[in-house]
Length: 333
Length: 298
Image (cartoon, rainbow over the protein chains, first blue to last red):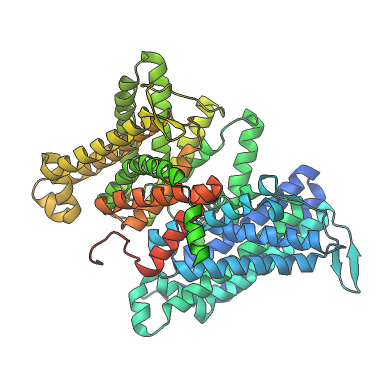
């Protein structure tokens, strides 16, 4: 006697939710948790969570390059920093300070930096790209550090936070809770946009560049143009993260443009899992939380980067997919 | 015409000569750092982000050993040996498992190493900068400056080390192994050359060269935990401008870039003079992406 296949007896497909439904339910649950979180967290951890989201956005923007286009950028601090300084400039120059103007100025600054960097570096591959982007970010660092009249030099700039305003509808001061919600909205929207981009035909071309650049070119795609777009897009989102950081902390400093920020960004990506978009956010959260806990247990002077650096090295050797690597296929479906 | 003549008359000749000497001195030390970096890249396909930290660590070892033994020369040799062992250990633990994987992984791992080493140095030695006393005190008069002989000496010693290293690569047994591995890894292994150990040896040699230049350079400025970052960036620029993995090109590029920076420092703030080398890098990438000092583009 033959036994009927299991799924004929019990139609599994009917019982299981589709991939899309699971994804959106998961997305909504996480967002809902993040929305209610500031209502229960004390002030310090509320700000901490907001900052994690901002670093997550920065890391996610570079994931578009690292994970999808296959180019490791060590120069994201330049885009982040130009976004910051652009926003700071708009907030200082225009009175009363306007949030949307700051975002526009920050994005414009980041876009200029990205255009400049992309123009010179897209023809390079692999390590050459990494080194070149690193050196370009140092160019911006030196300019910002030495051009004291405009950028405030080593001391940076201090400014007041703009109101959260939607013309004719809403206008109020930011407090730490509304700030968190605002950042969360921007990060969630950015995630959805980037996810859409990576799943679009454009994103498919980027991934085929990652897998085999020569073949992609042979098929007839203008690889340079796609790489250019990818660097620009990535730079724009990094600039957005810079704007958010500037608004959150009400100061900018050249330290954030130094290439160690780019190095941190790469670490968030590797720890969380490249090519997943959510992974870098998780990686940023993990990194910041570990840093916070280590300095709470061992004091402020504790060199938290020693254990974190060792974890980072171990992850590259033993777990190159990162924390969320196991879910990579599922998340990109 | 008058403006041009005036411009040339306004160039201070004595400053130019002083800066030429300065440029060549830093150029030779930079060449020593960069030749280790380019060797490691040319043979192992590893971009060693931690090279500046090996330089910094060498300088710190020099400080410690010079204080313990009282002799600069003992400190120089000792620091080079200790950092060579450290480099070999790092290579075995972190880079050997990555052989055969995407070379991009190595830049990430060495970046991690550089962070760990740098923070270890900050933790162990504190944020204040240390000094090694100069081992020789003579000075000679260069226009209105008392120029220390020591600087001329370190430039000469760097040149000697690079030259000795070149002879070793050309005629030494291990040097021939290194070149064979660089040419064809699989074939070298088939001929009985222990390729993984050649890699370890190359990394150790590169580390020792970085450490030696760190100790040599330490008396001219202080030693602190962040000095490596500055040097590794300049070494990267040199290696790209000179052509990745090309020893002669890196040496030429190191001197070329240091001279340019030194001349730029006549008119600019030293921290802005760095931009000159960035511009050289950009122009190189635009017009000769394989390197300025490569005879035929590969």
